[in-house]
Length: 229
Image 1: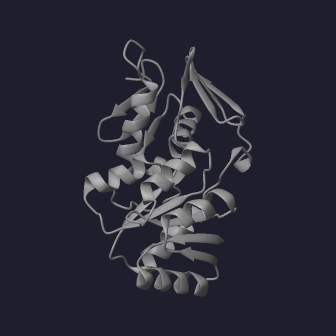
Image 2: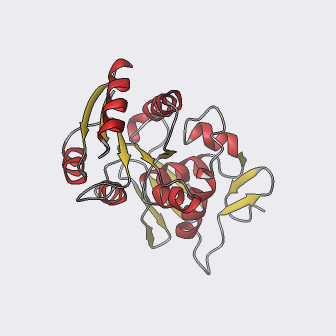
Image 3: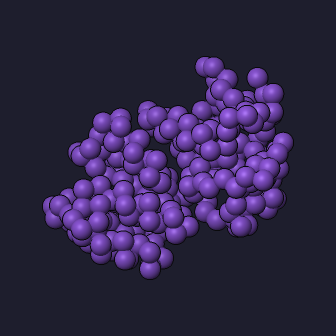
């Protein structure tokens, strides 16, 4: 894969760059947020490894800019900021995964491998281009979502999550199914990534006065659809 590392700590940047090259990846590495943003928005990288605390442009601003530009390059955030609120902020900004420093190299390589295997774009599968459940419609080709007359703006990961829920509407969807189907994890990474994204998606899909579509099945997972409880 072609990877971009944006990390201002020279020791960490060189260590990760060397390890990834030895693993067979093509790597670009910069230590400045502005340089990173320019490269990430102009070059076809397959994965971005991003520190949060960067000079000139911070990491979360880079992620938000990518997502606002409809660039769905997977982003793995590396940060010493490891509190729950920090991880939530990184995921809500549009990050796909969050790894706290100091980290084990084996875990970093595993997470990169998982993110790199994940299908991207409408051509990733033979599923229909349009999905409709109740009054919500998802267009996989145009990457748009509408509920009735209301347009719903989603981050790339939220779009992928909603697509999975709609394709399995009416079924009980377990956390394991979501980890494998949306995050391509075949193990539980012991994070609250699902809860964060479901909460964000629910806030956008289920507005006051509308029948709720995302339902929690306590102790199991979720179900999508009208009157799913």
